[in-house]
Amino acid sequence: MDFGLQDKYALVTGGSRGIGKAIARELAREGVDVVIASRTMADLERSAREIEDETGRRIIPMQLDVTDKAQVDRVTAAAGQQLGGLHILVNSGSYPGGSPGATGPIEELVDEDLLADFDVKYVGALRCARAAIPLLKDQGWGRIINISGGNARNAGNLSGGARNVSMVHMTKTLSNHLGRYGITVNCIHPGTTRTERTPGMLEARAAQLGVTVEEVEQNDFAPGSSRGNAICRMVDASEVGFLTAYLCSDKAWAITGEVIAAGGGTGNAVYY
Image (tube, rainbow, N blue to C red; front, side, top):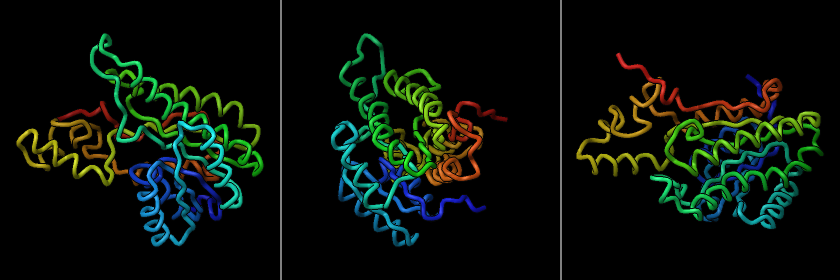
C-alpha cells in the first residue's frame, strides 16, 4: 500500500533508539527524510548512519533536550531549514534512562520526580508541537503523533500514568485546533515493547529469578512476557513504527484526536 509519504519531512524526538528509532526507520522506508533528535549525539549519529544505509533517505541527527524551550525552538527551526520544511512531528522523547517513576505509597511520592517526568514527556511534547505547528501550517498538511504509554490505563505509577493521560488530553485539544489546517493529531499507547535494550533486561530479570530468558518470556514472571497480553508474545518496536506510518499516511485522514493502544491486548489475555 502506498502511504503517500514519499519525500515528506519528519522530526522524531527520542529517535536515537527504541520506539523512536523504529518509527524513524519505518518513516524512512516510506520515503520520508527524518531529523532524529535526543540528548546523546553519539547514539544519534550511529542510528542515523544505520537508517540511512538501510533506506537511502536523509537522516539528520540533532541533539535536543526537550525540557529547554529555547533549544526546542532552535532545533525545530533547524530541522525545517535542513529538510526543506516539516510535515510530521513524532513526540517519542522520554525521561533519560527511563522515567523516575513516582511509584509506591503516595505518602512517599517525591514531587521532584513527578514534575521532572511531566516536564520531559508532557510539557516536552507540548513544546515541540508549539514549535512545529507553524511549519506544518506552511505545508497545509501535517501529522503529529504522540507516543504515550499503557500506564495511562493502569494503576500504580503515579507520574507515568498521569503524564500519559495528559498526553491524551493534549492530543484531543490539538486535533480540534489544527484540523482546519489539514493537520491530524493522534496518540499511541505502546505496552511493554521489544527494543534493542530488551535482551539485556530479560537476562537481568532471568538472573534475578534464577530462570532462563525463555521462561521469563513464556511465563508470568514479568510484564510484557508472552503470557502478559492477548497475542501471547511481546510487541516489537517495529510494529509501533508500522502503526505510526499508517497514522501519518494519506490513508488516515479520518483518524484524528484518537488514542490507539499497541500493546497486544495487554491486561486482556485469557488463558486456556
